[in-house]
Length: 397
Image (cartoon, rainbow, N blue to C red):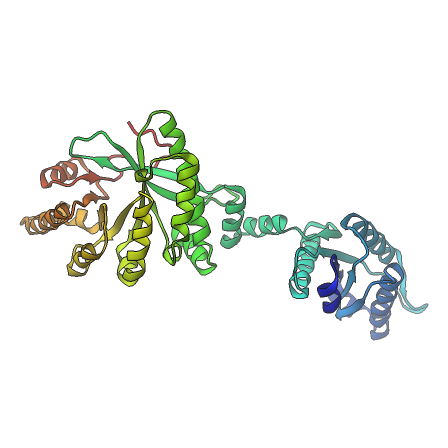
């Protein structure tokens, strides 16, 4: 069968599953069971005389057809299924009946036998679940079934295929007096029931299955197109977009972004790509090359979760960075500081950032008091739920 599938230009693999086999084993004799198995093999041979067939497991049978198109193979399998349903098995002393469910898969491109076999079995299991009796494998349908069942990886694949991720935009306001508009972008994934999937859960699934670069490209594409529409309306907006570590392994993402910007005629400095400090420290040499490619197309770079220690400051000597988002713990320190020591340390750090022409962002701002405090310290941007939580549109006044 494997050689037939490999050599055939077109091939269909059918998985024929004997229904309720456990009940048959309990109720029928050994001879009765053998009669069912042997008779089904004979009936498959009669309906598909030119096709290789086999008794695969106790309760399953396989056939490979190469002479039919998908429509006619469906009709022939339906006829076979009906014939088995109507057949009386066993002997005069023991009359038995049996039914089968059939799933089949069509060879696409250069699929090997194992993949085709898995697809045919998946189609059969789906047919059993939906009482469909005969079912053709569909990747789209399989994904939908898995996604409905709570498979996060399937939800991600489906969201990529159907553009059904959701983007949210949280304002990052300039507290030095400028009226510029900029937002941080957040990605959300919803289940079929409308529930928001925990971000860490679906990001972990995306990382483990190497889907993060595809997600990053999806986010970039959506952001660039949305920004382009706003700029055509006369609005100047900047977006801060997270990138995963898998997207900085080369310069492919920079080339992809460059092509998007060229097609949409969007000013490149409207895009700020964000990398976490831990990622930068782990892969500094690689990110130096990546940053050069990003700056060559005119986009900007930001470091998030910035700790401000000696290791953090060394990054500034090697990378050309336009923005730094301090770690959220700094906001808590400011709110809880009694002696002003924490404030002095933060001001020193802000002075160093200014020397490097790096603009500072403080997240998790939750009160007027904190916002006023940041303004007095000379922070450039503030972000937090006190100002505005993530929104579905970029229309913060």
